[in-house]
Length: 280
Image 1: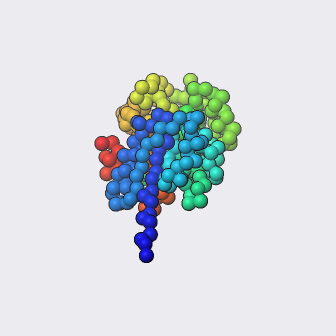
Image 2 (image 1 turned 60 degrees about the horizontal axis):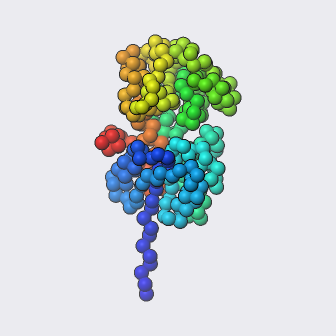
């Protein structure tokens, strides 16, 4: 009589290029330790030309899933065997699940993370209370737009440095999305209940966001998806003008919850200790 083979230790990863800057290994490592779970979460720097080949080998190596970040979030949808409806709508995926039969499922939890963070930081926030302004028209903006419209926001004023890109998104999401020229973005802030920066402006190593912020006031919630630095100029000025501010780290934390639960079988909580663990 022989002993049965020990169960494989589940592995998960974050895939990007570059990836050394990612805080996701700190986050998932903290949750694994907190819940006493077997498993490892590692960064994988994969060049675009190697993405298909390497991702398809991960299930055989014991990986149960992965997060996906720049520049692979759109390309991964072409590699996956199945793509969820929300990932199709956004046109990008940030979460992969590797099933026991070796098939790869692609999902997008960015919109979930965005809304969950808003509700965590501003418990009385409701989508149907007024217009929102979204700065930027990239992949993050697509996830934010889908989430805002699903939450009942009556009008989203979308503005981007390249108007054509914003117009393509407006065509995709329908009549509740109105495109505003970038040089008129400051005027669009007036009476908006929510302002979301999805651009890289204000991030370390990037130019500052130059949009006039006079339209922001005490009735506005301002969410900057940038989290390096944690307090951007946008958030600092908005706070000085009496607005409620929400930093970008929370979205990173909340979007990770569904993937961790599917990979390791426990739904983690986002709390102050989680933030501290990631920021250390």
